[in-house]
Structure formats: structure tokens, C-alpha cells
Length: 85
Image 1 (tube, rainbow, N blue to C red):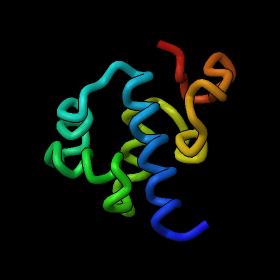
Image 2 (image 1 turned 30 degrees about the vertical axis):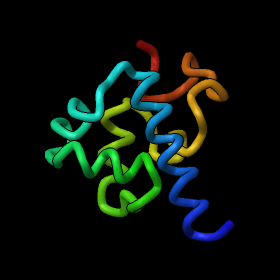
Image 3 (image 1 turned 180 degrees about the horizontal axis):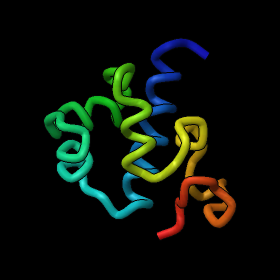
């Protein structure tokens, strides 16, 4: 997988988890202490959340490895760290 496809795939997972958790881009940005356009660039695959991956996963209440799997494919009852809403 080339880097552009990888960024797009990761961005899609970030978007899916954000929506799954009922957050807006603005809310996620505020939790991370960054501006909303950064979230938009992550989700669109324009930039890679290199220094924010752990913080993004933490905001969703999941492990970073779990964030790379779309929420509809994860049994959220079994995730350590509490992914249940």
C-alpha cells in the first residue's frame, strides 16, 4: 500500500471512530488542543496524524491499534479501556 492510500485509510478510520463516538471535528480538535482544519486534513488523508495518533485513540477511549479498524468491525463490548458508549 502506498503512502497516499495509507493516509486515506487511516483518515477514514479516524472519521469513522469520531462519528461512532458522536463527536464533531471541532470537539475532537478541542480535546487534542489543535485546530479543526487539522482534523479535516487527517480525515481526508492529506496529512498523517504522526504526533497525534495516541491522543486521538485516547479521545475515542480505545487503543491506537484498535483505531485502525473501522468501529463496525470491532466488538466494542470486548475492548479494554472501555469503548462502550
